[in-house]
Length: 123
Image (cartoon, rainbow, N blue to C red):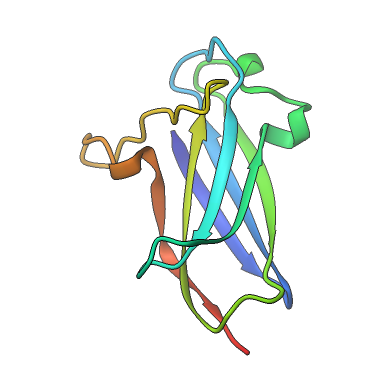
C-alpha cells in the first residue's frame, strides 16, 4: 500500500518520494509506475516505470509490514503550460496492475492512486 509520499519540484524536474508498505510478503517482483497526466484528456506527458531502487531492492525481498522508500524523478522539460496530476501504482511481470485500494476500502479506478496535489507547468 502507498503509506505516504513527498513531492518536490525543481526547476526542470519533479522529485517524488513514495513510501510503500508491504501488507504481506510479496511473492514476486513488481514494478512501480508514476504517471504525470493531463486530467482533461488522460494523456500521459511524463512517466517512470521501474523496479524499486533501480532493481537493487525488489519487492520479493520486502518483509510483511516493512516500509520501503522509492524516489522517482520526472523531467518537466518541454511540458506544455497547464495543470497536471500524478498517478502511482504497481504492476506485475505480465504488466497487470496490482489492486489499488482507497482509504474507504474500495478498489480505485484503473488500479492507480491519484495524488491530491496538482503540478503546474509554466512557459
